[in-house]
Amino acid sequence: MNYQPHADDQRFLLEAVLGATPRLRELRPFAEFDDALQAQVLEEAGKFVAEAIAPLNRTGDETGCRFEDGEVHVPPGFREAYAGLVEGGWLALSAAPEDGGQGLPAVLEAILFEWLSAANHGLTMAPGLLHGAYECLRHHGSEALKARYLPKIASGEWLATMCLTEAHAGSDLGQVRTRAVPQPDGSFRVSGGKIFISGGEHDLTPNIVHLVLCRLPDAPAGPKGLSLVLVPKQLPDGLRNAVHCERIEEKMGLHGSPTCVMRFDDATGWLVGEANRGLAAMFVMMNAARLHVALQGIGLLDAAWQKADAYARERRQMRAPGPAPASRGPEAADLIAEHPAVRRMLETQRAWVDGARLLAYRTALQLDIARHDADPARRERAERACALVTPVLKAACTQQSFEGASACLQVFGGHGYVREWGIEQVLRDARVTMIYEGTNEIQAIDLVVRKLLPDGGAGMASLLIELRDELDAAREFDAEVQRRFAQLRYVGTTVALAAQRDPALAYEVADDYLRVVAIALLAWAWARIGHAAPQTSRWTAPAEAFRRFVLPEFEMRLGMVKRACEAVISPAT
Image (tube, rainbow, N blue to C red; front, side, top):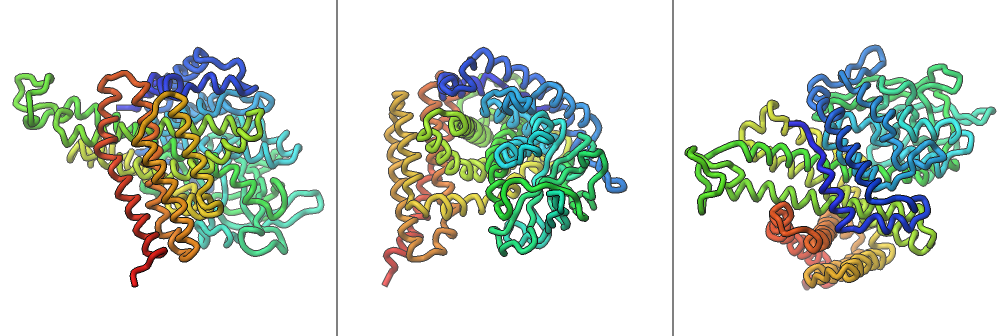
């Protein structure tokens, strides 16, 4: 079966739980935004994804991309589907009207990309970096660069890449060797090689805008000496730039997306932002990309759940224990959906999808507040919240995407291990989300070392107090959520104290601390959902699964972090 968006779920979370529209209308660009417009956009987006994007998923996986004489050809149907995305204005949803965009809230773009990833992850990789490239160029590009490239990137008429990784330097960007030499006309000549470049070459669009992390002559060593240069595939005069794809990788999954090895041979480019300040410009792109990777994880898990749930409602095996289910017929076996082990697997994944969705949508709303609120204090608070929550969502959602897809494959038994049912493709495609845009381990280190330690946990404490106040304002007081937030605030200050005595400890406990935060935030999300949702099995079953099968991890991980800290603060004598 192909993935099917269900816009009613998104609308419930946005309208009934988050109350998104009134908050958005307080922001000047969205003063005319209302629930009717939101419903119309989601309905049309869901229809397009179901009809034009999802049916190409298996073809993309089985056919893959073709590399011939330095050129990459995408799978059959991809060009037409991508053209539909551009012509329908879907890739320009949240871009500013002055750049040719529709000026809609970021949360609608977030939902669109969640659906696109669930329906066809390979094809979605092509426009996956457009939003980040747009923000990067909009904030750091010169007026000449913005005039030439921004409208085309905003619309998706030209695609973009993020060229960071080199063969000898994976996540250690300080080792980047690609060089950029300034020219008398103000341009730069870029030389070097990059690997793992998604969409580095393809025939979806006539031009590809590469944002290349490189080093200028006499630049300082390490990450402080990096600059960002825009290098187009096609130069303004129409000639082909000296940008070459040497090969595409043979991958475990994502066969519909070309992952390229790129070579720049004195290619012409232009500086984005200030010299030796490339990481500052690049991180605008990376942080936006990380939220979208979290949404990829949510979408892929939902896609796996849809397949497993549909199969469980058709497949009969043995008699289910306990009272006879209502679905029992004259057959000698019950639907496997009635078996407790299968229900647990399915309802647990549903709990992750719904809870993580609420957190991701709230974060997207915070992005809009950070960009558009008239109050500087509210903008700063929203930016701080996004900085703290984004690494948590990226790591937790992508890990669960892979582990949850494996659990959904288990529902199929042996049938899940063969290609016929399509669940194994979801598992393969999901695995890379734990690696790119910063591995999940790097996300955890970012959260603890760069976000928690510098202020001793004060920023995290402020976020938790803000979330607590949202519960109170909605008259949804939940003593258990408040208790866990208090424990989380305490353990944050404990980690900060212990790290002063043993700097290595922060790195050792980072993964566990991130999981503690993720589970606590999910508990908050389910408290919000539980108070707003109707008492039907659609919502009560995953709520119960969260309480029984997900929430206990909080105490386990919290204990692991506390014991590690205590061993440093009060070592045994």
